[in-house]
Amino acid sequence: MSAPQRPPVYYSEYLQLDKILNAQFPESSKEGVKADDEMLFIIIHQTYELWFKLVLHELNIVCDIFKQKEIPNNSPDIFNAVHRIERVCKILEVCVQQMTVIETMTPLDFLDFRDLLRPASGFQSIQFKMIEARLGLAYDNRFGKGYYLSQLNTADIERVKQAEADESLIVLLNRWLERMPFTENEAYWKEKGSSSFWDIYKRAYEDSLSENEKGNMQTFTKLFCNPAEYPEGRSFSMAANRNALFIMLYRDHPMLHLPFELISYLLEIDEMLSMWRHRHIHMVQRTIGKRVGTGGSTGAEYLKSAADAHYIFKEMAELTSFLLPRNQLPSLPESLQKDLGFK
Image (cartoon, rainbow, N blue to C red; front, side, top):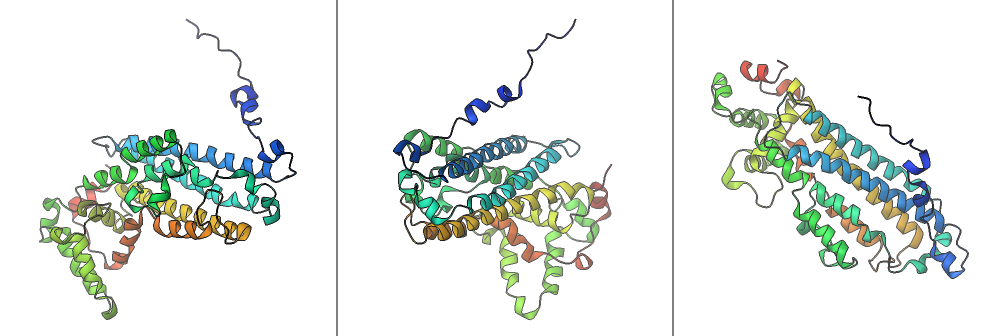
């Protein structure tokens, strides 16, 4: 039986170009004001929103992968997740580079139409707020919480609240890291005459510290050795923290290649978001100086404070404080080395 004939696909219809290319309505044209750069301003922001839509699409796929109770080591799931997180990094890199186009608009060019935009503002980008929530930026960790939802309509407030109510990537990642058995399985470490990897690693780490670094041991003990002292309010549990550091330490073993890449790309997402925010800050300072933003914020000052506060995976970045060079790493038990290799 032959497959049913599909109607031919036409380029402009497939891409809905009639809708996209006719979706620019400058406020200056409505008012009869000459402001040639408003078209640039609109298209740049529409392009950002399309990229944001794709970022959310990729993050939703990754979150669905990590919502599984188990992810078998021989399944394609972790590679798929890493591949999509890498894609998010590349999209954010393009978003940063895209700033060079809007930076061709001078302050006078912007002033031609700026007052016609009030109170619209990039602060009302629902998709960007949803990306932050999907990644794991908690409401309590946001700068300017009182202002955060104040500029949105009722429908958009509900969309953001729903995004924050869903399990974020950082929550799902924490659960996945907690399930890794490598540091907690006593059977491995009996070969080394210990009940725990952390007893062995603590001694090696302490021996590596200079006199000026000895204070690090107190933090190390709280984060990796003593559950009773583990700081409250952290995104990652002690078990997840331990396994993330183990992955970073022993990344050269085949089974840890992809988990290490995943961690690296998550840190790169924070880096790209930070670069995007700071590029935005400099652009705003150059374009409007110390004037108030169209949405009523303090402009560049607000953006700077938010940029400093909104690091999502900072706990993972801090783990580099506790790494050792390869030649000082405790050797792994033979049974564990076999389990970390390809079978």
